[in-house]
Amino acid sequence: MRHLSIASAALWSAAVFAGPDLAAVSPADQSEGVSPERITLRFTDRLVARRSAAKLTMTAMPGMADHPPMGMAVTVSAGEDPRTMLLTPDQPLPRGSYRVDWRAVSGDQPPSTGSTRFTVR
Image (cartoon, rainbow, N blue to C red; front, side, top):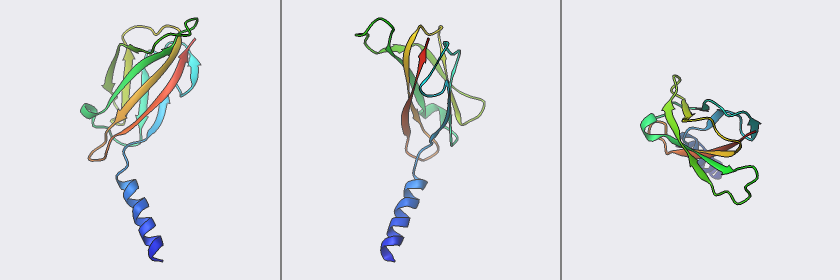
């Protein structure tokens, strides 16, 4: 029974100290479509905007097999909902594949990181 208590305590402490999870993203992960006017990341917890961040990288361009990853100019801001982060491209995105890398901080929890991908056709 003691082993069960230790395991339960470990799981509980991991849950308490886990950072925010990505709950929804638009455009959806692995989706294809037109250039989005805005990329929306919604998390499970309120974000600390000044400590959370994201960047947009073009990972592939049609017809250019050796295209190096290229950072895209975006404005990152907090949404009206304190659980959202918005990325607004400075100009329409050209055709290609993109990756959004994010870092989300909520309260005293350690940061969460992750990425999502989409393609502009």
